[in-house]
Image 1 (cartoon, rainbow, N blue to C red):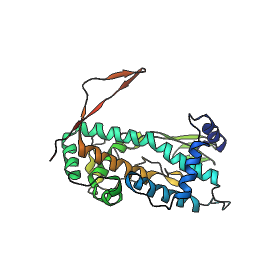
Image 2 (cartoon, rainbow, N blue to C red):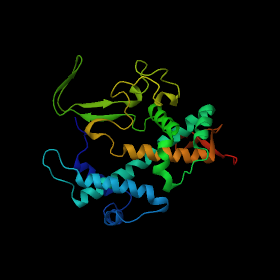
Image 3 (cartoon, rainbow, N blue to C red):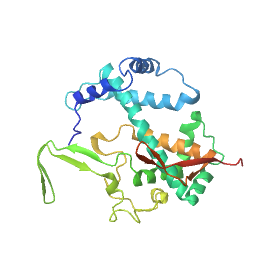
Image 4 (tube, one colour):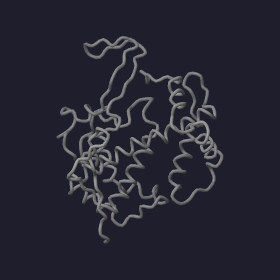
Length: 268
């Protein structure tokens, strides 16, 4: 199966984006490539480390059939996709993490205890990340209950069959992580918010039952970075604020907006 989104459609999308992908942004990407091994410090250190690693991996990647690598323009577009595509999905994961923490004060207190006293600065990110075990579990559980990619679509390149259902060549198949992640035959008490299920004490779930980033050869290329980013940002927020839910629901452009209100934590 492959994603039913052609290169032609992708390039058409680039042409209608509300900023100059091939102009200003492309110039910035080229600058990153030229200076990727230059020393980086301060708040950009962790991002620089990720970009350097991502660019190195993409530069060495080869097409499985032709053996060709990315051209300079394709390399720029791939890095741009990782950066742009990661904004909304990570923001959604953080919102639902905060909402769930606001709904479970005991879980929020445990997370606040884990991050108390840690040096959660951008430069210290790679060193402190392995210590944020519970924070990562909270993010993982939020991704289970509210996966940003709640449905994925793939197109069959050959005819196939699933149990008694024939799947003709060219059919679109929808995979719904939202349903898989709440399946009562797979998860214990699936509707409840319980980060402990990701602490290693629970029996492992079946393969492909947890798909917050997809799976297979087209798994999200930024999965590890997204988890690291969401875990660190959530830890920084909870270290400084206590999340609580607003008593009101705000209508905005015909949508109902749920509000999570942060309250500064008192100094310890």
